[in-house]
Image (cartoon, rainbow, N blue to C red; front, side, top):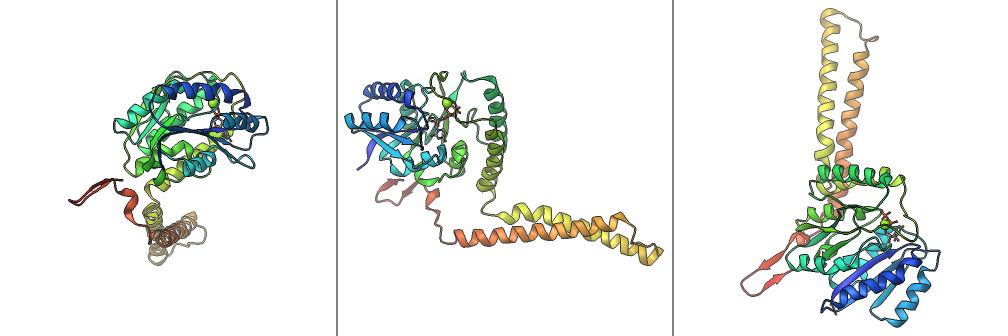
Length: 319
Ligand code: UDP
Ligand code: MG
């Protein structure tokens, strides 16, 4: 049976933060008249996180714990919770007390007001500059490339209608791009300014390497959301351009040889022509291979994920 609200909190070595966070969530939710659960995902912590969680769970059965054998990362943690939760509205928030649970009712209001996904925006961010600057760069790039108009993609504080999570699937470190993945299916996405608090206990789990990984993920998301159904459109165009220029350069050299009797062996242009032809053929073949993979994977896929409602005169069914 479904309940109204699920609050999902991924935690990795946050033992000092859990108890205060649990209390704050509880008091924020007591102002709402909704049935709820709080799902903590212990992402392979090696401090006392699990013990603290278990003590809370024994007292309060609305608390559920998913425990990972080792650290698998925030995306995997969120994904496993998304498969598990029973709420019609799902809220995710960080477990480090940087997000303020008092904001939860505002998220719920926004969802009930018609949004499918509400994304928090850490308006005045309480993090060191070394974190804020790369994050700004990352957000600008993501906004530009995905066309989704958000200021803070990576904010852990978000709310979803159930249908959004049933539609998208997460892996690797893709949690940063949930809004872009959701936008692809036409879900309505809005932004909500949230308070951000400095971290008092524990350490940030992400260092510099996330910038590079984040950038690679961005390329993947761009590719997956826009081209994965037509890979030949991406590879075919540079491929054909390269092939045609290669052939023309080659023809030009052949003409020179037969009309003007100029030797071809020491012309760098000849190498360029060969390179362009081979590159062009490679691109086109990669595109065709992509098409084959897509065809195999998608031929059974129905368009169900794209449907918002079905109106057939008998019953109006919101999906
Ligand atoms: N987290 C997790 N698994 C990881 C890394 C982080 O579950 O591998 C959790 C972490 O415990 C916290 C949230 O994800 O609740 C955000 O992490 P963090 O505060 O380190 O990120 P930052 O705020 O520095 O971006
Ligand atoms: Mg944090």
